[in-house]
Amino acid sequence: MAHVVVPKNRLNELLEGWMKNYRVVAPHRNGKALVFEEVKKASDVILNDEITYKSPKEYLFPQVEKIMTFGDGVEPESTEVRKTIVLGVKTCDLEALKVMTAVFTKGKYTDTYFEKNLNNTVLIGLGCRAEKPGCFCNARGLNKAHSQACDMFLTDSGDEYMAEILTCKGEELLEGLQLEEAPSPAAIPQDDNQAGVLEIDGEENVIFNKTDWASISEKCLGCGTCTFICPTCHCFEFKDTVLEGVPVRYRCWDSCMYPKFTIHASGHNPRASKKERYRQRIMHKYLYVKQNFGYTACTGCGRCIRSCPAGMNIKSVVTEIMENLKNS
Image (cartoon, rainbow, N blue to C red; front, side, top):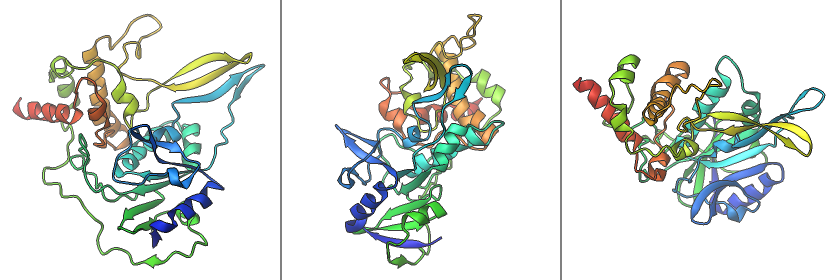
């Protein structure tokens, strides 16, 4: 695909033009936190080397989503969605959206709500220069400087961005703008990873039964912060309520770390203890999603590490599990 030069002094012009036809979601300062939010002014957009507090996954998989109403019959909620540009997505979050897309569209059933959001979204990636505290994307085998899992990828070159156009959706955004073409780079920037990719590589039953999960999860408070802030977590529940006299069903984010997440109608709970819930979280991310979809559901973004009130560290946990496997 083509490469073009986007001068930084023209970025606001581009953004103002896009806002006429798209909802633009971009990193924006909200208090002290840098977050993905819909922006109304180009000057509100912050493109720098910081990582946002949360990923942009909620613009494809909303935290609360109205899905149907009940009247004389069941009426699915309209799946018509707004055309959206998500700008400034780091490589770890682009990798996470690959996981989300596989889970919601590549399995036995397709989630039409996620799929329509994805089809109406243009993803513009942005490279990282340095790992942040808690980040371990390098250990997960990601290249923080570059990704092709988007429609357009920006590389900061000082006074300009080098824009790599990767899809037709990305190409459409720059039509008629008369930007200077740039030669394709001789080589894509790569991170130097000498230690190998951090994975859980072992037999499922051995990991399940032989790991000291009680010790590993001892500090965990079960607050669920890690699951809500993770760019690949996708657990949800349904909530039925009455809105202006009409019964409505919503889909809402949920967490496998909550005690009632797996409780049955009979009252039986197969994961009644914190140890069992934490075991499920780690094995789901590093084993089950990989077995089912070919991806590990952890990108090394470090958000769970930075936000955990108890100081839990998933990188250390996975490393400990692998060390114990090697020594057993």
